[in-house]
Image 1 (cartoon, rainbow, N blue to C red):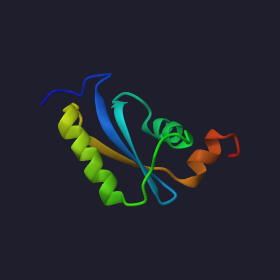
Image 2 (image 1 turned 60 degrees about the vertical axis):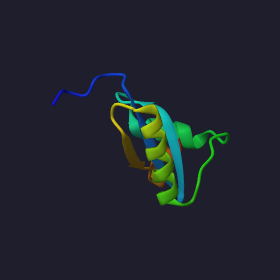
Image 3 (image 1 turned 180 degrees about the horizontal axis):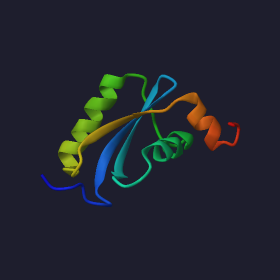
Image 4 (image 1 turned 180 degrees about the vertical axis):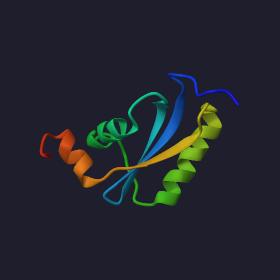
Length: 89
């Protein structure tokens, strides 16, 4: 099996405070936590409350786009966003 290639895309499912976002075309070599914080901070990005629906959507996107690395999930904690906003230690 080959090593993951840099700059290849995947679908990222981001969970935070009971909400779930689906990020299409995420870059494999990016910091997933930072990518998640950035995506969830943008109020224009839609979210859903049902994790199973988000995962189904993500897999449907992956099947259509044929991303190299598939679908991955990241779970953000409250302190992750606080540190990004400068409120953390």
